[in-house]
Figure 1 (cartoon, one colour):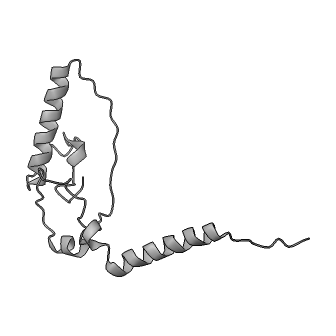
Figure 2 (tube, helix red, strand yellow):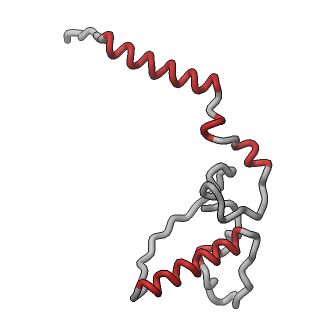
Length: 125
């Protein structure tokens, strides 16, 4: 078996060195101005989170233990029905994120709003 020599071109070396230098600089200077202060977000732990704002809610909040992603088929028959659906959904989400709770239902049946059952406003977006 012949052993091949690893040849590194000047361009390859410069690209690799530049990438390492850039990563090191960002690490030394601190990436906090770009990525936010997660420690500060942890100190602001609360059951209330603003729904409307400059940025999407939940981006700089502490990580949650679990998340759920759901895909549904919309069965609205008209643009008006679809608009009403989204308005109702927006109102419910805003209510829950402001600290609202779901009314207790008959425990024999699943909750009427499965998306928010047992979740409350735990900073999940």
